[in-house]
Length: 120
Image (tube, rainbow, N blue to C red; front, top):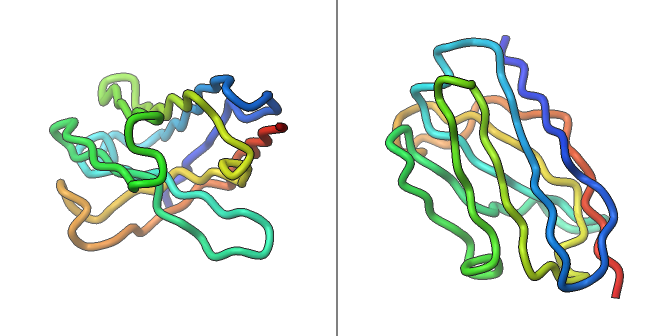
């Protein structure tokens, strides 16, 4: 069982920034892809971005240029920097662990989520 623990959520005004973090205990997950997803009330879960084992990141168009994913495999941590936040970024944000190096086989494990609320 992989335990992923997110932190760093909170409330911020539009235009502000937050930094989310995700940590895990098993060293195995330092060598697979990781991702961030979000889910707003009444909406389906949405992919935000992913980062490969080799730290190559890809992003959804809705966050490209505003959000940045980074990872520290030695520290077993994954970060999501959220800049220029908009009210539509309000959601529960989830960290996820993939099944391979490049996130080509989906995601197998999920954290409990951390809430981000952006006010206008």
